[in-house]
Image (cartoon, rainbow over all chains, first blue to last red; front, top):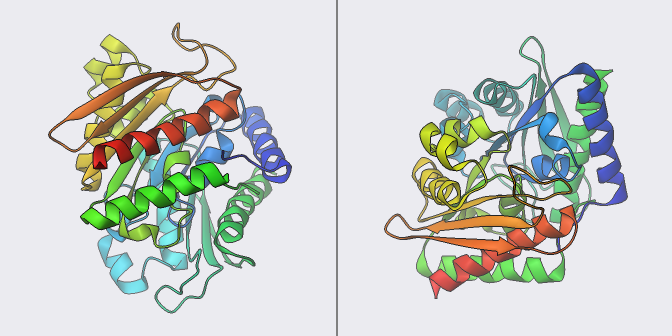
Length: 162
Length: 162
């Protein structure tokens, strides 16, 4: 069955402790990871105190319908872009009423998407006042890229939580 | 990192083939699995042809906000109930514009929720005309219960696809 590695599981547990200490919550809008970030956070017992939920926005139109990304932004910059990652983070935060919003979009592979090669991932993290976007080039196959994106999101949010 | 077992991965691949053969799509609203069903489907290359997306409805109020479950239904039957599983499946199907909707709610453990013990899961599958709900009692720890729920959802949808 599906299991978390000790590495990702430890990151998720550390993130839960950091959020609990501040009384804060998180939500995520996920494209290439398709729910794996939220599912990893939920692997830690007691996750309901810090994880509100999120959206799996695999189809492009769902990035607007479920996470509130403006259609014009998608048309101008494309679904795999820093602008879309930022809008996913900001939009899902508002829709879920969480302290933090995380947005993940990119190319898991094996085929390129819109001129972006496998491994290219954009990660947005927002608290409503500041939105950071990271551009990542993750190594490995489809599974490694998706797992690497989840780990990067955990680390990025931990950095912001200080 | 997070990986799918051969068993669940094979089920996801079989499900993708069955949906592709019929030109149909799926979306899911997930509570206890928190995105693991969608993430498992997305582990198969080419998933975008059959997986539209979904919602992670970990917090009770998000079952209404993201998946359209009526608040009165939640108040009357509770988040862990066959009625909620059916409403999650029907609601997410409409919001995502998919052929099929899957709803998963239950208790991953280790603690009981609303009088339901760990392992109790309700699974809804809807095509808009007929909604089936299964009551499951899954063995094992938190991780096994969540993985078992994902596998059960794959098998249930495969049965409906005949």
